Image (cartoon, rainbow, N blue to C red; front, side):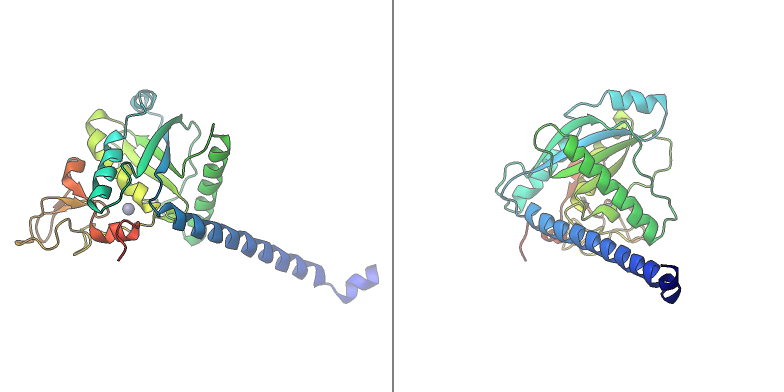
Amino acid sequence: MVHYSHRHPEASPRLFRRLRIAVLLYVLLFIAAAQFFTARNVTDWDTPLWVDIYGVAGDSDPATREFVDSLSGAEFADAESFLAREASRYGVLLEQPFKFRFIGEHRQALPELDAGAGSVGILWWSLQMRWLATSLRWQADGPSGDIILFAVFHEPTEGLALDRSTALDKGLIAVANLFAHRSARNTNQIVVAHELLHTLRATDKYSWTSNAPLYPDGYAAPDARPLLPQAKAELMAGRIPLDERSAQMPNDLREVVIGPATAREIGWQRR
Ligand SMILES: [Zn+2]
């Protein structure tokens, strides 16, 4: 035995390393394949997509706690009917393309993504999120939703990175960072709809450096003359372009539309 291991000192670790890489590749391939087929099926729009919503307290502020305790099943009804309204504009035949279901509070903290996380950190975070979503699906009574949305509420004074969930766009998991205050109810609906469409591979349509809506896909009416100011925002751009330098948040979903580019990405328009 001793003699044998002297002649091949590296054989065992190398084999182990190859095996480990093979297993990792297999797992990643499996996740990728599973998600490829799920994502193709979910945007057929022949049956409604069920969205399971979990409320999460994003901080330990008593006001946040009170707000999360007061959440009801109808909290995001406006976002649900906005999506139905926009789908019918694109000829989707479903009366309700998304069916929201408020499951309750998720009391544990969500896996955290550091602001400076590199690609390995983001991958690790997204695997943790997927694991969490999978275990929630297993625990669900009856059939679980197609999409899981975490509505994370924060006290309104905090500076918030509102749109950080693009790493999950293929996992059918959405994280919406919201404000725990009644006055933010209308803008919370916009964030929920925006983050939800990321799960169906809708892309952001604003500049990552200046936050300005991108022309033409980030404009609600790219053919309008005069072009500026625009009256509405495109959902994935998030803001209403006013002039060359400024854009403002819409007050509510009545000032928001889903543009053709986003509609194509989520399968509402086949061109
Ligand atoms: Zn986004």
